[in-house]
Length: 246
Image (cartoon, rainbow, N blue to C red; front, side):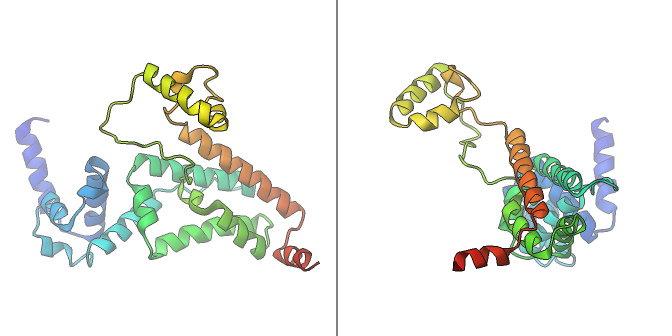
């Protein structure tokens, strides 16, 4: 599009009546483009071509805006194909959630910061729990496996190491990373052993980060297999309590 055509399109977009859905979706787009830190009521009003007070007819403030943005993201999670067993259905549901969270890089931070359980949040949690119950899990076991999954139901895992670093900083050259790895290896040989497990003797790759998608799927499959064993064995928290009394 030419510059005049872009200006015409932007002006036409500004004339579209404001609605809660439009406010939330523009906020999601702004977070995608500039990061969650860039999202403010004032900046969002500028993006929509309205005065900030106009937004308060649709969202009560920044907290409600973030709650709504999380709801938009959850709305993009795809349900599993019908007819699958519980394990395949849950795996597909959670991998869909992960794909959405990877697409919206800010979403993890927003989800973790929310304390209010909206209808969208409760509906998604209910669907995950319902997959277990529909697969033959007791309510007791479902309660505990939901705790075990934790934030994995939203598509991300608790990380063992924070390897994000400064996004604006240039990574050290391979020779420097190898030298640091050798030095650390003298003091922490077990950590070096697991850090180089996939790189062999090439120390230049240490500190380069892990394959997050692989690690997420690996942990998910380990958990799902363990959950299935507990289901087959008829596990109950009452049995655990009785064993503790002996």
